[in-house]
Image 1 (cartoon, helix red, strand yellow):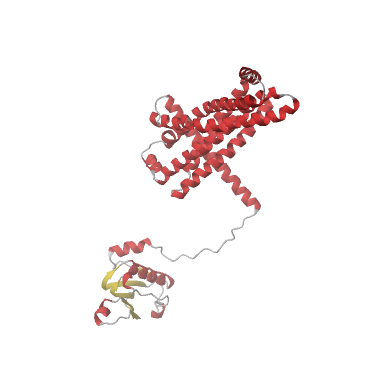
Image 2 (cartoon, one colour):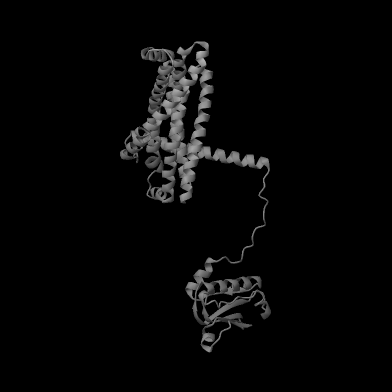
Length: 388
């Protein structure tokens, strides 16, 4: 069986690809002639029944005779692969040792037989399967986060012994970004929150002639709940999102892979300064935000009630116990650790494209805010249980 591409001149016929299958004493022989290049648009197809027409016997060999081959590229490899599939279907042994070595290597990269697409599976799962899969994913994520936390703690202990891979310069930069750089937005938000609390409180307490208790309202609410939550939400949106974006960008630039290849601990070199800086700065920002919130309530109260400034501050600090500040301080520590750890984890598992950077930052902010509110609810239950 012989096939040749059609052409318009004898010169073109000499270089056009052609093939023929002949019976020999040792089996079938596939003779290749001409120039086999995909750009010429003259590549030929090998019919599936081409070998069957030669009446081969099972176990015979199919050899290649490339004596007339003048040039080839990937199109020739695809033709040979089709021949190899046909030989497999006819139970023949495909013998390619006569081909150029480069063609043999390329052909070896292709599978021995064509794969068949797997049957379509119904993507719908039962409710129990979805619940089970979600539960397993959550447990796996908790396990991974705990392992990451342990790595960070090991890095912290090494830092105390002076053996950590963390650089002091990185720590100071992160401390500045997580602390002093956030003072303005923390001041504005907490001042307005304190002013709103005082305004609403005065309107309600005035009905009962108990305006003086607005100092306790603003002080306790700020020290116990509002300042810690608002500061944590600010840091989740400002610092947590920045951590996730920075680490996911390093992931996309393969900087994380480079650190791992060189044996540098990612937890100690990248994560530790980020987490440590936020844990150090967050409680201080909480205390600062509490004082600013109380000052916001003071400004509103001085314009709406007949009370001296000294009397306002004395009433505030006499009505707010030190335990309220300690409770808020402890909450701020846990909020900081959660925000930093969650942001770093999200950055590490982000994809490597530019779009994944934005997705990681958004996810870090959302998870940080929701996690802070959930942690605050847990602290509220614990505080009620211990009588704080």
